[in-house]
Length: 90
View 1 (cartoon, rainbow, N blue to C red):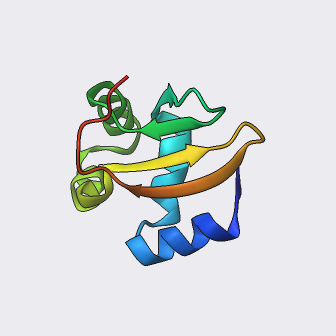
View 2 (cartoon, helix red, strand yellow; view 1 turned 60 degrees about the vertical axis):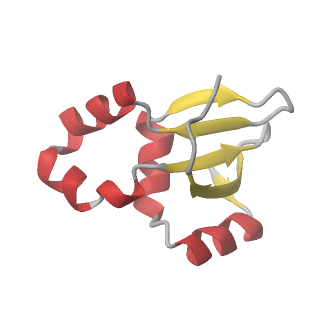
């Protein structure tokens, strides 16, 4: 996944570590936004998969960022990243 300048700025402004984006790419659930992009987020199942792979202790330390999301364009570029404040609807 190639980060855009916009996404790098947003990650820095919002304090989202690159590790969280890597975890979203590897373990996050995908939702299509019907505009050609995909939204990655941590659902309950995704959090369980992540916990099985990295363990409970690292997950607890980084739990404040588990409400993060990433938007990936159809060209594979990271468009933006942020923190969810509301439930993501399918």
